[in-house]
Structures are given as structure tokens and as C-alpha cells.
Amino acid sequence: MPMDANEIERRIKAALPDAEIEIRDLAGDGDHWAAAVKSESFRGKTRVQQHKMVYDSLQGDMGGALHALALQTSVPE
Image 1 (cartoon, rainbow, N blue to C red):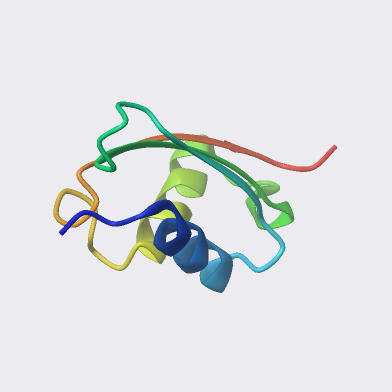
Image 2: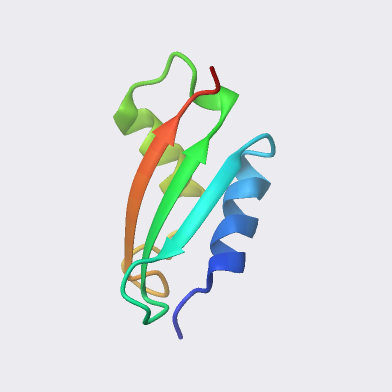
């Protein structure tokens, strides 16, 4: 069963409580998502480290319940 946007957001928020999150369904199928995540926790981290923080929050469901996630990360200005 695919993961819905609310569950994706809930998991990211659990790991990054200050995060501002915008999630879009890319294909209209509930299986291909895009997420923009802005968090102070990303400051000083490389893009790879930032993405790993988000993927880790999804608790191993990338490639399973969550088929595809296009990810953009940033820090607040």
C-alpha cells in the first residue's frame, strides 16, 4: 500500500520538528511524490547529509511503501 502525503509529512516532522514541508503528488497516483523541506537542522550540512536526514525519517520505507520521492532541502533565510 502506498504511503500518503500526511504520513510522509508526519514522519519528517517527527524527525525534524521545526521543518516547513510542502508535498506534491507528481503523477496523481499517490505513489510518486515531491517534497520541499526547510529546516534549521540542515544548516552546515551538505545536501547529501540533508537528504539522508529526510530519508532516515522515512524509516526504511523508501523504495517500498514510498516508491519515489523527489526531494529539495533548504535552510531558513
